[in-house]
Image (cartoon, rainbow, N blue to C red; front, side, top):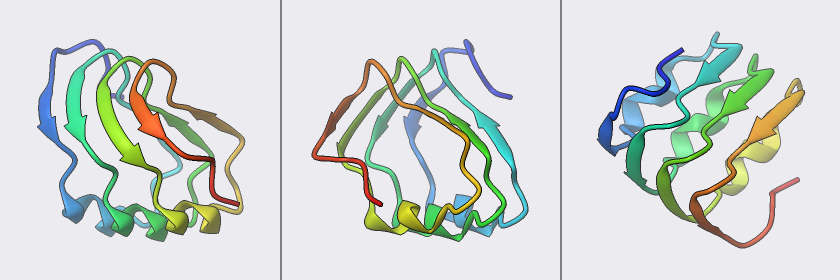
Length: 85
């Protein structure tokens, strides 16, 4: 969990190497940019919380591979488009 820390910058593509991650919480920061397509490799992900950042653009279609996702939160960002299935 990396939340409420005033973290800034963009999400690195290297995050895709976290193949076994199942819970990711980085809400209430100042992250910007778009989601890298590499996060589609998170096949074990169940919880993804990225509320209250400055993330933008369209969610990558690769997140449609998250077959175990239970809770997906991206409120209060600058995202556009629809949630990939």
